[in-house]
Image (cartoon, rainbow, N blue to C red; front, side, top):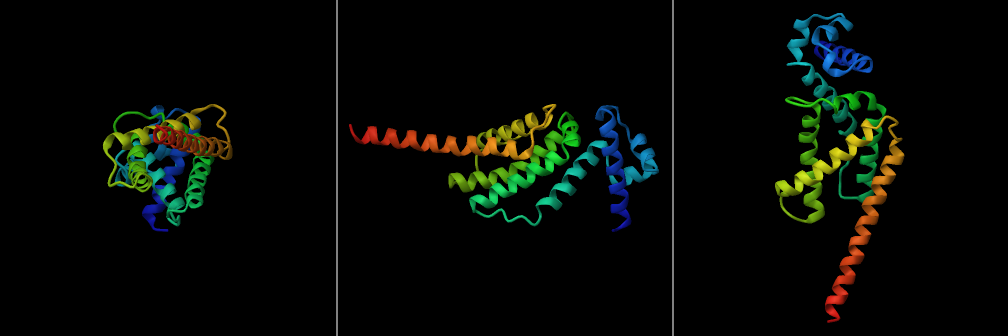
Length: 193
């Protein structure tokens, strides 16, 4: 592992430890550096600020998690990817519980939002068989996903990922079936006139 990555991972581990002990807003760069026996110069060589470090942790861990994923058009593959994602967030829920509460400029919440938007745009394009979705559609689904994830992870007794995923899957599938039934019934009524 390159020296640069060793330093980044040491700083990341230090921040994660500190976030287990105290609120993020009370943590400063000096504490992060002191925890892993580094100086502030090393920190600022790699990161702009502690917010940048939080986002780097997500980017690095999450990209490593999903880089081998086949996000093709098969339904079961997509659910397997969502399940893997939920397990990752659950295993790291103490960190992400605090990270999601960070608001403002450079916050993890906004970083995560910008990260998932293109993923959702691709999925919406596939499902709705349209070109790029408009901003309203993309914001609607992004907000829904973020709200569900945030509510799940911020709950004091965070439910296991299997339970969370089962609830999401049931709501999604039963909702789609119900809408299809209603549309079919409306068409039959319309054609019967």
